[in-house]
Length: 267
Image (cartoon, rainbow, N blue to C red; front, top):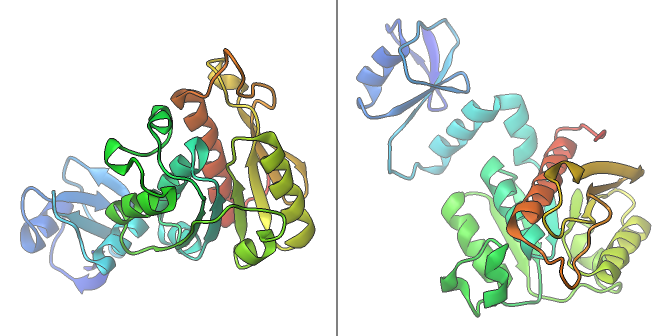
């Protein structure tokens, strides 16, 4: 029977998934069969794909690639791997979005922020006490390396202005707007729409407080622009930014980016 095991085609006289594990791995290995982790043995068919994962061991680049492909399916994974996404602002939205995109294996990320990690960031941003005082770009790149050391991560520790939007982002398919302040959001979105005609922008508006999660949604107000949030609840006195709704909105943005990388342009 011809099977693909950890990315390599093999001809094996094994009738079940666990027989393959017994032959090529160890009893503790996790088995993923055609993209699904199995807990009970399964009969195999010619052409099946298996991935054997050693617990607690970092695989090499080829093995990790095979695992990601097994989870996502080859067609989906190959599109994600070719993706080039820039994230403008690495606060509550951007830091969480970057981690999500790293976990799904986006091939190239650009992280842009001029700020450092402060104690007040820890209530909603994807940083730890050990990152305090570090540039957000450096802290986030460090985390991504621990998640997937084989994707390409570029950082720019600069303040984004109208004058450098084109220079920073013109090589990227998608720009993710993840600022806190409305004037910065507007500046980036308008400048990108005007100066980056081939780029899609995924922005956010309205994720403060603790209103219903169900108010947060993804909309497409115009061609090439997607906006996530409830479009209403901004941060103000008595209505601060808190992890749950910020991360829900970040999830919307990350999922819209994923859809765009897969060629799906509706919300």
